[in-house]
Image (cartoon, rainbow, N blue to C red; front, side):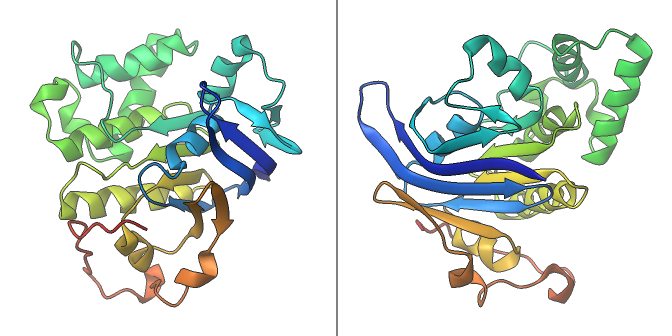
Length: 250
């Protein structure tokens, strides 16, 4: 099933400055997609357009989860966002409440009322991200990697069709970054598409995916440029690790 169908999409900042033009971008169930490019190349703007944070200036077609993004009304955007999970580089957890209450807040805000079902769902997602024992901790008591795991748990609470991740390993060390990417890969293998921006070429070498590059106001699929570099997961040496500290602008 096609989740995103962008054809000849153009994006611009509110001041009218063009960011990207003629974008053709497609996402289907279970795909793992990288969005690469230098800082300021439009990666974040493209991601934000998917969940209605950046308006589409012009397009032949711009469909996200069956919604026409050229005609969607502001009041319809919250319902669109409830069908996806969004993960940020800086986690954006609520600092004044525990892990459990962070997750509870999201479920209640999206219509969950039954306390038993809420507790069960929170326990399920915390188990999926191996954070069950941190249920009652405050965000400041967690490491960066632990906070990102909780952010991922929050993103999958409502079983989204798609996860949008903006530099999800940007503030993490090498080993923790590896664990986070493996976790996102596992999620994609259950059928949830993952679209993530990165400027770390070594991710592409370790984990197979579809690759789009933002450059000079354009977006181009460049997967074939990286196929020779990618190592299939089932062919990777057991225990192999990538040096995520060696970030490269790509």
